[in-house]
Image 1 (cartoon, rainbow, N blue to C red):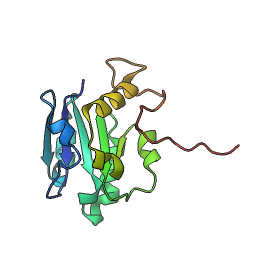
Image 2 (cartoon, helix red, strand yellow):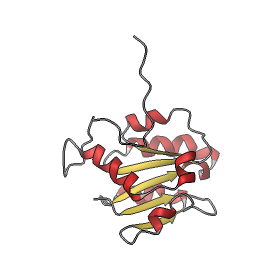
Image 3 (cartoon, one colour):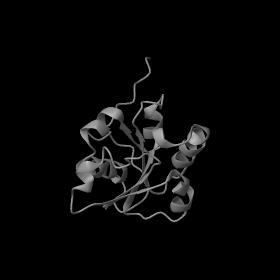
Image 4 (cartoon, rainbow, N blue to C red):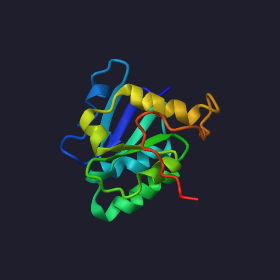
Length: 148
């Protein structure tokens, strides 16, 4: 069960948008510089959600860091997109990576939101790191269906 959030951010206020989590006594939250992303993800903690603050990643590293976090599918991860820079948020969800858009960040990410995503991912295989293919949790953007 997730009870820790680690945000990779070079922003001056990296925890902005995560206030509800930081106020919860059941959750731990911390921020690390974007440069720590690869080192921290070598030995991920299964009780942590790893969040990449996309807006704070240097432009020269954005594509590389996003690709890296998407391929690391053995733990929970998410991308915070404060500036609406990601053109296809559904691609993240198709790679079982959560997406926190600017509107959700303005409202504040609540612990229940993260728990719902975790439940959705593991709903078919409790206790497993394999992902589910069930419906998206409440609050996740829908993937548009192609016209037949």
